Length: 263
Ligand SMILES: C[S@@+](CC[C@H](N)C(=O)[O-])C[C@H]1O[C@@H](n2cnc3c(N)ncnc32)[C@H](O)[C@@H]1O
Image (cartoon, rainbow, N blue to C red; front, side):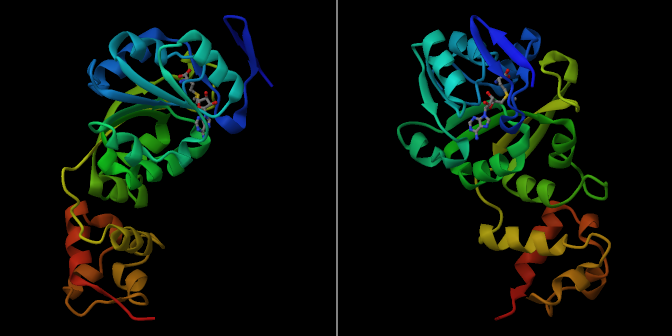
C-alpha cells in the first residue's frame, strides 16, 4: 500500500477506490478550460481526492459541489475549501436529475475512479437530461472504446450506447507518470455532451437491442437478433453483416424496423 500525504493529511491509497492522485497542474488547468465550465454554472466534481481539480474549479466557478466517498478525503476537502458543498458518498447513488432541478443543467467533471468507470458512465447516461457536459478522465483504453468509430476493434456496446445519446469527444491523452501512485495504464480525458433530443424513442429498448446485437461479435446480426426479435421488415443483406459494421445511425434505423418477440 502506498501512502500519499498532502498538507498533513495522509491516506494509504486505496486501489478499490481508484485512488491515483494527479500531480500535474497543466493537466487540471487544461481539463477545466476544455470542459467549458463558466463562473455561473452549477458545477459538480466526482471524486475530488486531495483537490487537484477542485483547486482549479474553485478559482473559476462560484457554485461547486464535490462528491467523495472516502471520509478522510471528504474531511480534507471540507477543511481546505469551506466555501464549496461536499457530499460524502457514492457517486452511483447521486440523483443528478434532482440536483439539476434546482437550476440549469450541471457541468460535471472528474478524474473518475477507474474501477467503476462503466457504472459511472451508465449512471450519467440515465441522468443525461441533468447535465450539459461531463468532462472525465478515465483509462485510455476505455476512452478509445467510448469514442470508437464503426469497423474498428474498439467499436462495441460502450461506443454505440454512449454515442447514440451523447456527442463523445476524445480531448487528450494523459501519461501515467503524472499520478501518485502511478497506475499501470495511461489515461485520457473525454467530454460527453448529451444530444438535445434522444434519437431512439424507447431508450431502454435500444440499449437492450445493442447488447443483443453485439452479444457475439463474430456472429451476423441475423444470428444474434433472431431469437429475440421479429426481423421481417429488415433487408436480408443487412442482416448478414456484423453489428460492428453498422454506424450508430444504421443501428438506430435497424432498431426502428424490428419488433420484440413476445415471450
Ligand atoms: C482517480 S482519484 C482522483 C482524485 C483527484 N480528483 C485527482 O485528480 O487527484 C478518484 C477519487 O474518487 C474517489 N472515489 C472512489 N470511488 C468513489 C465513489 N463511488 N463515489 C465518489 N467518489 C469516489 C476516490 O476516493 C478518489 O478520491
